[in-house]
Image 1: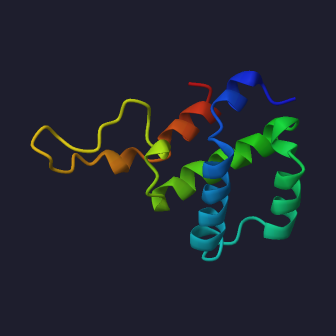
Image 2: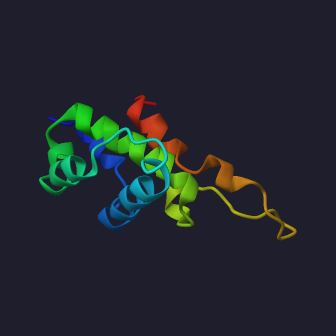
Amino acid sequence: MTPPFLMSKFPPLDLAEDLVELYFSRNNSLFPLLHRPTFQKQWSEGLYKTDLWFAGVCMAIFAVASRWSDDPRVLPEGTTLTTSDGSDNGAWALAGWKYVDAALGE
């Protein structure tokens, strides 16, 4: 069973689906680590809810794919995107780190 702490750190389903798609289209196509049909079957069956190792793989996917996302929900909570003068503060460099931290139990 996946611990409730880790499950609480999973992104909302719509964002999770987007991140899975981004991972397979942007990363796995260049460096194929996962067999997409197998992953998709296990994902759709909800294996992440009952298998800690699969949940860890999902967190890794979310973290890597966040690099390609423009959804601010991939940023750590409370992150602001601009400085007081309206310029970019580099917050997007933090995209996905919350999933790494969750997988490491931090």
